[in-house]
Image (cartoon, rainbow, N blue to C red; front, side):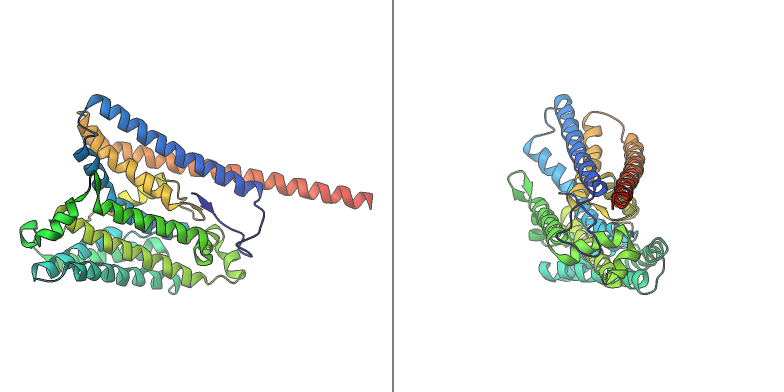
Length: 356
């Protein structure tokens, strides 16, 4: 369900303006359009390759999307507040290696996952503090922390590599196992997605993220703790990137100093393609998940149809540009609708004043 920015002065009981209703309709239609495109692509691929939707094929499709869905969910929280986190790929990589080192040393799998999440929380807190309290632009902060974390990761990892042979069999089995065609990792990602969506819709602090992204100054004047909300968004984003790192280790069993490199751009593409507006205030985590599913499915579908993987990046770029274009069109239409509404109200007031 798509949620748009509430009135900063009150998050409940306020009638929606025509502009807000327009945003709701457009983004619901956009999410539906992504789902339709996704299903059509699956149907075409199945027609060209009858093994694509086998039990193993479905499991692979879901496994490939799981990691991206998790990170995109966290990124959505940040983008909704009109910010961005470019360090998620580096956080994923170093968290995966930390979990792998712990497991190779004979550690417990649960502790390894917790360690990865805590590491992600630490980097998320750092980003959040610099953006919210340091008042440094998010793009600058997270670009800097991306390189810092990647540098720490490279120095720590060096030429070492975590391999499946050095990890507990149960951990690797969990990463590839599931209930029929549904992997355990996909169920974890689904649970995180549902909880996050519920939080954004039913909790005041979640709805305030939309108010903040829609109009930061109005949100501040309305008494919303802007810095606290931004810090919360970045912390959650870091935590989910850390969790994704642990699940990446379980899924692939191999981690080195290059793990997660360039992943941040794929995440941002998934979020924007899924309808989370880059200027903040609109979109949903369900849309971001659909965007992630669409982008990862392209990676699986093109090879299944015998199409060169070179086209994958080009198609991702085209989808990103189209998504940004749609966002711009929506913004112009909403501005026009609000302007017409304000004009009608002004005209009505003037007419009433003349009659008095």
